[in-house]
Length: 239
Image (cartoon, rainbow, N blue to C red):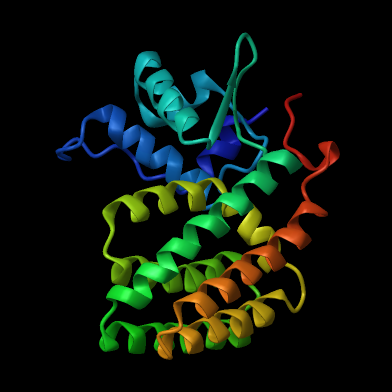
């Protein structure tokens, strides 16, 4: 079980009484950030009374926040058993990778069609920064954040709020999978080479090749992760 001692070690931001956001939305943001930053691990039980006490919120607010996170796929709520941080099955992970590859094909195509030369130059700089990060650290969260900059530039240049919103939701659900991929020795360097190839195709304004290379990048990550998903003994369980 998650104990109060464990919760007290989290760096979750407290509720801000001066915030314009309602308490429910603040709670959603705090819990979502804790999940995406891996302070709350896949399979970890979210004990209602402990989080209510820690955050100083009502039971209703906490449950509403869990419902929102459940719709985002970040939390799994089971009747009479409570809520846990979602653990993806192999099938779910496979489906998400397939969906991501298809979506990013469209994003890359729109970027090639709509991005300015300056945005393409920014994409080149992001790859350089990602490469430097792989040489500087083995911290998978830092590497993931550096890699995420690539997609932020793509989405900006693609100029589609709809694509950006959908991609954000998928990437959030896949965040654990992405860190697992980047944790394999040599994989960050492979990812740099793969995304550099995508960028070079974009520089030539070759949308078909860029999309194909990006799909291959996603597939490479998928093949590793599907064979390395957490087994039952790896998950956080209650006492």
